[in-house]
Length: 269
Length: 342
Image (tube, rainbow over all chains, first blue to last red; front, side, top):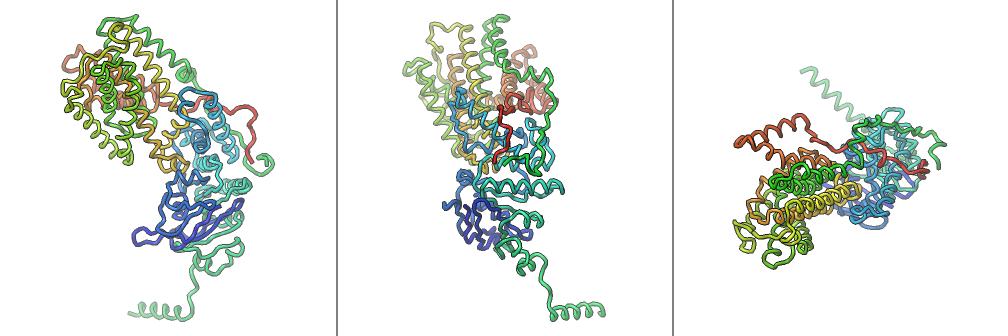
């Protein structure tokens, strides 16, 4: 479904992405993990068209979408959430989720002006669809009111519902657990499982390792814009390169001796 | 797969506060009819030629404000040159009617075509800009159109065009008849603009206003959608221009200054951006209040300005802001769709 090849992205002299490659297949959750600044969100932005990569290719369902505008990529069945929720704040919760229906709702200007039966059917369908996905993500808050009136955790759910209402074949979730409390994380875990069961390919950026290891079929580890490991969670967890990227490398004896020497020298001066 | 079988969250949506009687009244679907009835009844109260003149101007101004509301209120694009489209409509119909003796109603298709083209030509380069830059460039285009009209011979130069026939030729052009025809046309224009705002494209406009990137991520081609808002605004403005020419029977560049554009923006902001009843009221206030203040002579616009400032301090969201809750009618799901997908 998604195939990223040798993706490169530079901002001036900084290489945010340096030859990243990974894939995501339908019905599987692929997690992108890595230290802060490793290029995870940059990779998402390249896939969804918000950044134009300086090199490499992004293939969605075999179609090369590199450098297309975000709405064109969305039209191919891609949908995403943002690291900080980007909802339409002054609109109702339902309207926010209805935005997911934009791409598949059939309605032209004359339907809207004349309120044809097709218009009424379409509007009803959009509202029902919005309710269905809000049920699916388990939103408890007031749906007719403004989305900014909801607590943070609920807003994150609305953002996921909005992405799902697109009926995506590829879903990219950027840190859905950020800022959630323990109970909300448990619910998210369950929700992610149900999203996978819908059959879409899911790419997930997440810092909560417990959640990543439990929910992912595959984990891709990034460091300095490059993939340093790619495999099932169990294997990736034991990979020495991954441990090094996260914890730092053990210093060897010679380095330790040199450091001691330096400290001693500084002390006697 | 059912939601109910797993450890998933219990879904019990909270109901919001119940709507008060006043809210229900203000959101009633009969509200539009009430407004129309008021407009139709007004000449029964006062029907001096002066009053009819003011009321007809107010109705035309309502149409302008509703058109600009599509651009500014729905889509969030600050257009400071809206009088340009008002001018394009007025001049297109005026030139065709006076020089080619086309009946005014028959100029409408041409006006439609020309305003759409004008909307695309002005919108295509400017809509690539955002916020402040967009405002400045639209202001520039507004001035360009006015100056072009001042300098062309076909538009009559600085003195403009006169002898524009009424809507149905000169025979039936009583002031009261013209007022009623105008009110009906404007009512339809208000209804259609409101309907656009509630549709798929109307939602897309609001998504763009709220967050352009998020809208794009949901598949809204933001550039084309903004252009559509701009062109719709141009068509409404152009049609209002036709009425304007027919009403005054003469037009000149002095009618399409920046002040005119600014007044329309003021009507939209004063009434409540994105709110149809608000914008209608805002337009009526902006066009009628200066007339009511005529007794103050030279201090008229000073008093008007103070009044506007006071209103904006007391009600920064406008006199009648867009509803912040959906009505139970639009928010309700249809029967038998209680289950989650999957």
